Image 1 (cartoon, helix red, strand yellow):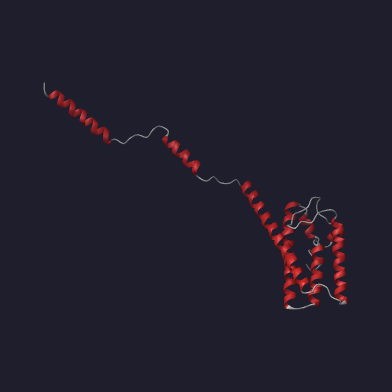
Image 2 (cartoon, helix red, strand yellow):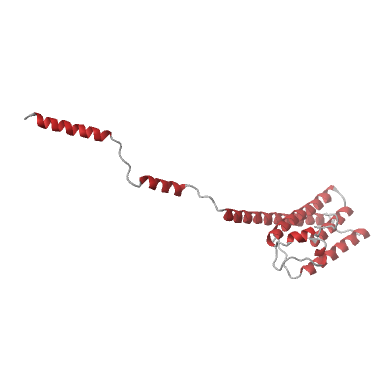
Length: 205
């Protein structure tokens, strides 16, 4: 009579012991929840089209910034030559070259029409201009500036004037490359135009 409670308690204790060592079963769906949280926290790959769009925008912004730097460099070099009185000269050949450069620049400006000039390179509306001096060279205005500048530097040659002249020409060349890259992105026909024209000097460059 007295052994029955003890046996029941022993069995109950044994059951409790066995239950205590058993691993706790995971709640239904908890693994799926962890996977969802892990998936949400992982960085998702950017679609190729979006990445290309962002990359092109950054490239265009960089090109416009470089063209602005080129513009500032051109103005700085010209101001330096002007401060040294090294732009104009009484020499007949310098005057003849600079007058020819001026006429080329005016011809290009008239041909360019009402399109505005942007300090930072930015293709204008209305398509490519491929007539007038643009039929032969793609950057007649920059060519005119470089020719007039180099004529003045040649008439007043020194290391200071050569540095300023180099800054002007180098800045314009950098701006040319930026503009051509932007034009190619804006107008698909720009590639054909490039294939039949020269940048500044026919048959040379």
